[in-house]
Amino acid sequence: MAEDVPMHIIHLDQDDPKKCTARAMYRIGEAILHHDVRGAPRRGFLLDPSAGIVLGPDDRTIIDRGAAIVGLDCSWKHLDTSMASILNNTRLEPRTLPLALPANPVSWGKPGRLSTAEAMALCAAIMGRMDQAERMLRPFRFGQEFLELNAEPIAAYQECSTNTEVVETQWSFFDRPE
Image 1 (cartoon, rainbow, N blue to C red):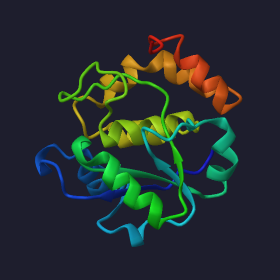
Image 2 (image 1 turned 90 degrees about the vertical axis):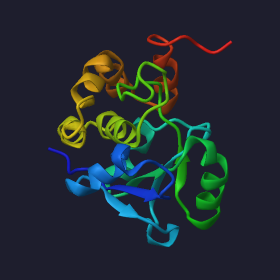
Image 3 (image 1 turned 180 degrees about the horizontal axis):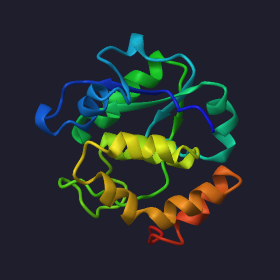
Image 4 (image 1 turned 30 degrees about the vertical axis):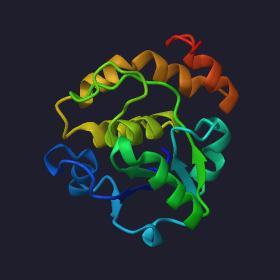
């Protein structure tokens, strides 16, 4: 069995603490929280919705060697400026995620608008760590629903052999943008 993927979250305190999935993941020991970019890992991948390169099998070797996945927990309104700051101050490689349906009550059913917990769990699942993904989502009422809504895409993403194949596979489940 593969080791868990190290999960780190840069938390910018821009959201409602009661709805913050990053803090909940930290409380149950499924993620390390950083309030400053300087504490983030030096090796790994930064989840960036505009990265242009999807997280997938091409990244598995680096992940299997202990590289981390780093999520940014910030307001969607401040995403661009926050992301630019992190990319300018780290050596993390930006990656986007293939599409998945959120089950969280704020963005339910809007493809790609995942909570931090959903995004991090999707990363673990794509990297073949379903046990880790399930543990990460356990504290959330929507956690099991997220896995059920996305069972088929996740299984398909896991079967892909390249990142490019993951990109093409997502269009089997979601509408391609015009």
